[in-house]
Length: 232
Image (cartoon, rainbow, N blue to C red; front, top):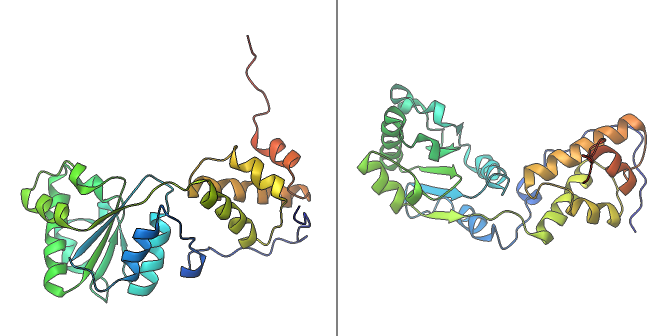
């Protein structure tokens, strides 16, 4: 069993958004390979899609650090602003890109941005919950371009990856926990990177406040509801 000793002071923790901090697994290996291949992409846009918490945002941050791409959302896609959206390397990341579907102005802006990026020899990284073929885009020209773009799916973390992520998140916070804690959290944590981050952050804050080590008993105290519904 790992040492349960915890540092007595809250020394902060790293954001774990660096390239070396990303854990490669079968569910994200293709996406990592595509980003590693930048800038030699065969099209002006690459789509990363998958469920919330699968690691799209983390990979996008890794790519942004290399490409100096600005991070945009659907709300930033305003036709008049398109000429100013690309970063210094003619790149940009657009989060929740599927949300432009059905919004005429945002669809026009995205089409304009795509064309501008292509003319400039740049690249767009588009993040979405599902592949462009399933978006309800109304502009035929935009749909044809995005459906033809490389689209790489990412899966929610499997058991091995989620366990490694939990260990890494505690390590980032300079907190040591036992293997029994990790095993317990595997069945009591939302199965996503975001869920794991929230759980570890909550436990770390609670342990610092209580000045206690993070044990299975402490995890139960913090994470399980105090009043369970009556049975029968």
